[in-house]
Image 1 (cartoon, chains in turn cyan, purple):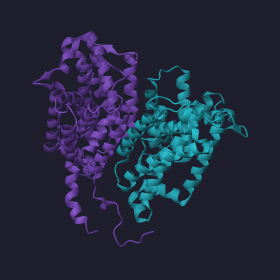
Image 2: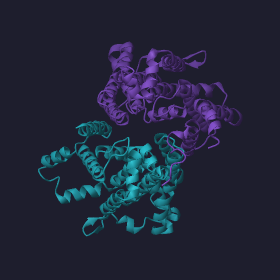
Image 3: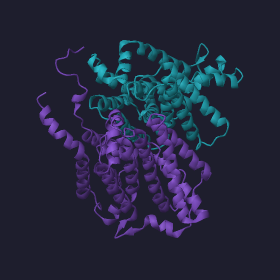
Image 4: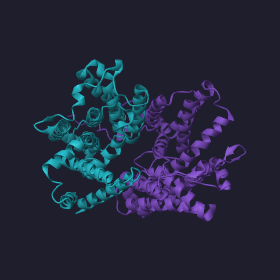
Length: 298
Length: 326
């Protein structure tokens, strides 16, 4: 992992690690970043969430149609409604102990269709009653806080929040549940609740990502989150998390997102056909997993 | 808990036959409440479409039984399609089919080796091979479909024998063959063993690596067979098709009662699972439900079906009574 970064730094002759470039990377990949942290949460608990892409799509649609209620209310609804579905995920996986893969797969289908039903199948550019997108959101990407673009600020806030959370007792519980469920149970960890919260968190973060997405393109579309699903899993994995849970770091995922973002960028610059991109990503994922595995064995 | 005794009687049965039960309910709904459901056209359409997924699901079952997963199935379908079409254009149908079967099998070998020898997680391995296979298919086809002009080949996939599509015979044959292998041959038992407990299998002398390699190759091979049929039906090689087929095959396997943790699952469950999806699709389409709503209904049905068929004696993880709660 460090190798990759060093490589990137060298190849770009120092341009890569320049603060402005890094900041720009963070800005560009804020959406992926936020979603990936949600995915990290779930993967740490030895699960997976295939529905994050659809949740993002749903939240973009919701945000747009609720514009007429004013920004604060719209934001609230945009985050809470997907959270309900996240709770359903959590219920079935944590309480009923159904396989996360299938539960979130079904949810993905469900939410995607729901978004399509609400939006009439296409993108939405204004809310019910023709309410336009709130000016706050329109200029969101151009504004900054102390020179840092707002989306980056949001992502960094999420980063800080999660880093803090993982240091708390509840955060440690997540690692425990993912690492060794039996041991966690015997240690008195509320396994069900922890798992449940992980899926809830993932959907909330996905909707935050959706808000950022709307700010970026000014459109609500059910398919907005399609590419983010695969990328979020890739980012988390490249960042060193283990799919069997219990292992992974915030920084790792952060770097994973940046690397993936850079990769995406490079692929586009090199005019690699969008058809071939999954192939390249596939190879990168394999490479990353292999390298991570080797590191663990030492 | 007082109900534990009773539960233990009912649960395993539900696990094994839950899929058949759900299927029965769906079929009943279809027969009584949906016009044209029982028509020959509809039934053969279901079989027609879902024989291919059926083949994929059989391969997926094999992989899932070893606690693995194969996400590359859809991409392999496309790869088969392109390979078959391209080779057929120059070397005739026989070579085309052979190439179409061999190339994906080769990818299966790669997946299998990565999982068995390098011990990499199947989810990520097959995610990677999915991307690679898809990329390969795109590359050699220049992202364009490759039309086929061989009449014999094309009619093969759409042909019917006594009103039943040829592909269905293949599927049924494969299902019976697989069921036989899984239950009456040592290899089959080894597959279950590896899925249940790798360590025990290893200690008992089972070559875990070989078994794992084999299931990925077999899954890829079954995809290839399905791919050949699919190509013949399309009348051309398509590099973009097959998207998300693997998700359906996984869902069918799980709905059919298999456990993603390995060691559990049966062919009859998988067959029921595939048919469940077929019937759902058919009912939704015949009832003229908007495609937008279809996804929601499908998602909900899958969730319910899984909840029914994945009942697990939860005693395993719960802390025994008498332990102090935090």
